Image (cartoon, rainbow, N blue to C red):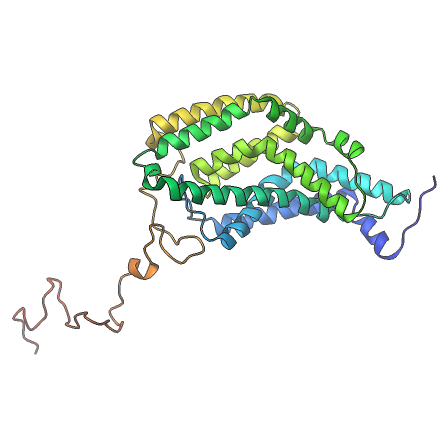
Length: 319
């Protein structure tokens, strides 16, 4: 069948499906979201059990994190979608669908995963309370979570989901859906496979510090290697051994684990999205009172010397 010449908006949409432009846009989006993530998360690593903050704040940061961590490894799939969609449009079989629709469906699934994790965190916090504090059972729970993430790397479900992510052509050829809704659905289905592949790694990230730039970059690197590098499946086996070993290390000697922040010694920081300190102390309580500030009710107005007595009471006369 001869190619169909598209004009106007359809022609522009088809040109935007050019693989080179799609690759540039996706890499650029990942780069920008990494910059935003680095800026917003600076100084926020309070170690395992970091409070995710208010829901709205968490969703914004989580979506940005997922875009930064997942878009690079999703690039082969997105490029293949763009190529197939453009080819079908050139043959007159369907109208071109923007890649953004597919990516939105993909990130939507990861957003749902984050919301579930947010709810689980608050549920566990409400039920367990101080039992999971770092000076009590916290290191054991974090260690077990990391070890479980490592064991999941060896399961058949992990293998099936990783094969899908590494070889998406079969999915697109046999499960292609037309139109905007179809593209969003395909993105969501691919996102489900991606969650099935990586939820264990994300569990490990939550366990050792979701706001840690170091651990976030490490998990993102593992995900990229598993999905894109030719021998990625074998790398996942090595990662399994490493995670189990790391889990045992955290449970037995957490203070010696590099880049693992002790929540008890983490510097006080603004609680995410709430304007309070990490231990519930308001920022006003943490800041020293200004010597020029108006005293509050019940507060002494006497000028104090370094010994804590007024100039008059200390017996020192003013010239």
